[in-house]
Image (cartoon, rainbow, N blue to C red; front, side, top):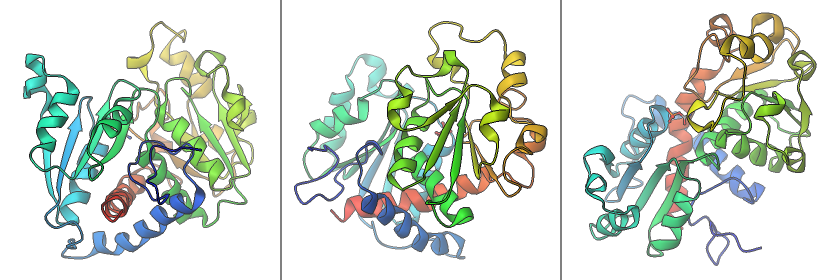
Length: 315
Ligand code: CP
């Protein structure tokens, strides 16, 4: 099957989605990231692998973790990274996204990192740019967030070692979540035998079963015996109409509390991509508790993004 992310040698040309990416490519990213964890823990956290490369952060939508960790990752690889301030760019004068990209390409860009509220924005740019330029999707609409899923896979592997004997639960607003889609594709490709989604009916895509997941509407049932709990944010900015009675009601049935977490395995880990809504998706005692690996996810995000950029630049 033709995959727009792969070049004619079946190597990664762009990273747009985890859907359809073969396991060896996912594993190569995770293994390469392992080698960068040591770099990020050194006193001098720099390697010259991308020296002289020009990387542009194009964030058309807000971000704390993704934008910053891409910037840190690029700097640790010795690349020149430019954060385009979209609000004060010529977009505000009516310039199209592709004209902006054309102008930055004329400045000898080597890589674009793109976040956009519209699904497909990064694909559009990838189809448009010259073949020597690489595009990374940093989150597009409700479609995909591949580097988030990859850093999640990296974190799971660090704590659980092997994907092949895990039960993983993804909890919350699956319908609007690009993170959930990317996680499901990555988990199933990497061989996780049981991926559960736990969500109210109003926050589930109608064809979710086709993704090979087990659906639960009761959180207590869904959490029983799981090794990993992946919490999601309520994506209020993408809801076209009210899908829940209230935040309090949501927390009562789908918020992760210590009581509900006790139903998972005793050594289960708790993850959240951020930003977190405390008291809506997760209570603070869990978010800050012993089983939470939410901040290690952020730290590992640097090594994973270093790996993705290095692999793309080498192809
Ligand atoms: N996880 C995530 O995408 O966070 P940001 O929106 O802060 O980048």
